[in-house]
Image (cartoon, rainbow, N blue to C red):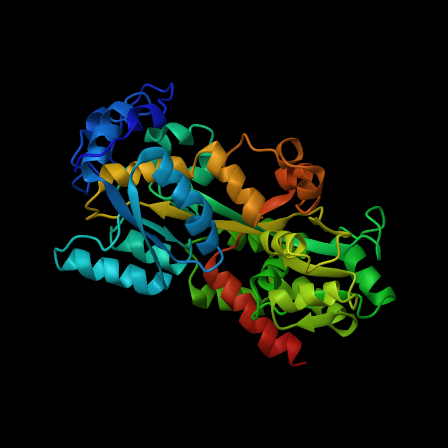
Length: 415
């Protein structure tokens, strides 16, 4: 297909002079239709541009609800205008999409989409197990990826993937508070100080149930990080090969005793909510001064006037967990070059900054500073830059998160 494109100009070449190599194998596991052996940031425009123009477009799958307006109203139109490539946008359930992709590959059919945006949890693990992701190190070949944090570019939820999963979205749990009710200087930012504040002000702290909202389980993990002691006891926090049986044993054992002692003292003096929005709603109506939250959700609520303008966010001094989701090329993609152009655009500084400004979605890029690039009002809706840079923690293994949540419900909450 012939199109009037300026892709060679659009896909700006980087400075690194290395070519693509297959990740985890001796050969690439997909048919690219371009010379992968010669592909690198410095050759990207010359190789990808003409091939993408010939393909004419791509199909993009999005597993989220929250990013739909951003893609449809901002990012996809900008990409189409800049490159002339057409994007067929599909949104749906991520687990279903993964199963459909695997079924298509097993049947020898083309992948249903050319680029996927999928969560880093069980869906991503399935994709790795099925070898369904094109084994190309995206952070090494995309010109716009040169400023990615190397760890975030190659590891997701404890899975070392070598760069085949592009870290499009980063999220972060936080402490959300009304600065008119509790001043920034008085804000309790250790778990001990938070318990003391809640004890002195019953009901003024809202904590999301760890099994009813991600901010609650994130807070549970963050408390565990703060109170569990001993190298052996803490080793499970980064053991991404842990079995559910071993995780259950840890949650019921002596290692976790300080965690449950903390919650046993905390629950009688806080409001335990049934979801992330419920916690923020208590802050919105003045029923709570402090709550557990997600940075991007609180940013969005503030932008829409659903929280008082005096609402701020912070991180515990001992750190709070965060995570993220990514994009990838599937094995069996029919429009590989257009897909690579799309991925390069989506990880660019410009797009990642727009994403942060619209959705409060953090970036794996190391060259974005909201304090320097946003208005003071926008920056105030986010976690302070210095705290985000030094207090973020990776999420714990899924079996451990689930085991702690279940133990909490069965043995702490019900007692």
